Image (cartoon, rainbow, N blue to C red; front, side, top):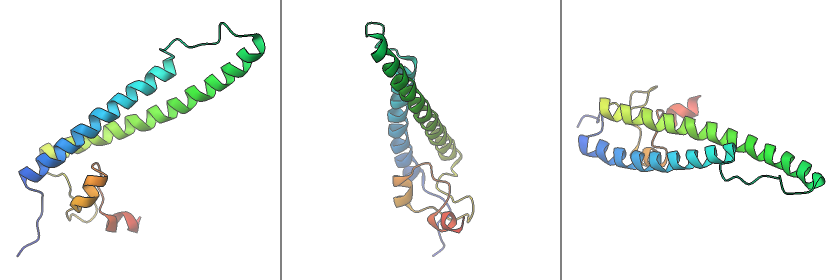
Length: 124
């Protein structure tokens, strides 16, 4: 029996549903991070004493920097998920870009945007 070269349309649809769920969650988390950065909640230090205001502003800046880094990382994750959806449409999803073999379903369920098999990833 020959080795499978791509996932079936039904299998691709299963992965698409999984990716869309993860994408929705990731986009929601990204919006929350953006809100934290822009201080959309309106919590500020205008009504505190000058000493606490300085401390609060420092903590707020650090918090915004952390949220900014998380937002960047989240956007990268969203882009990877969107790329995975394109690969599903092209029917190239789940094929290792190094070996050309199918990436195991277990790996794709854990990391749905994976483009490398464990074998290829370990070689790097």
